[in-house]
Picture 1 (cartoon, rainbow, N blue to C red):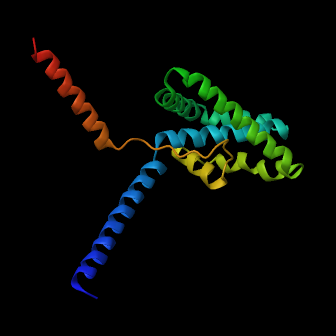
Picture 2 (cartoon, rainbow, N blue to C red):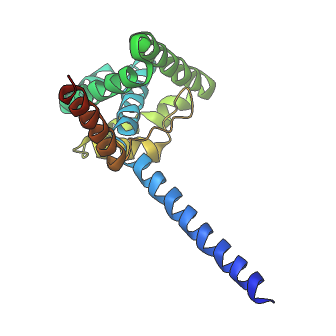
Picture 3 (cartoon, rainbow, N blue to C red):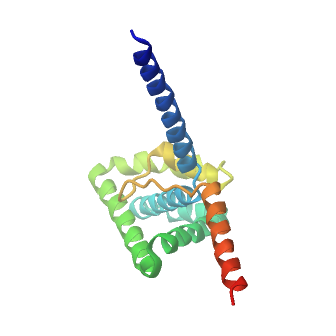
Length: 180
């Protein structure tokens, strides 16, 4: 192999490694996203509600809400923030559509499963009891592969981008105030 071919191959390997590193960092940011956790917790809450209604388990669902109410409420605020940021003025409609679609998808899954649905899902009420945080609930929902109406891959913006955006705004503001 000639010297230039070796350099080209080496460059390709280095570029591939850098790209994979960036993809891995991006995937890690998505897995650790506050919005992703909010979607997971909302999906879990909805799944447990559908289970409660389908399997006459309202007491178990009420116990879940009693135990995790503050966490669920906090995640609902984060979900609302995500929809506001993503959809602007139509955020409430988009969020309402998502909640409706979520319940419909999960209910239809229960109908398809038939009588085995309750056997499969009732144990979830006991499985979540030892959990303690939003992250725990989100990871549990991921592990259970809780049904969502669409594939959801939400990522928070990298901190460096936010810092640059803030710096740019500051610079623009400074320029406006210094000119007269």
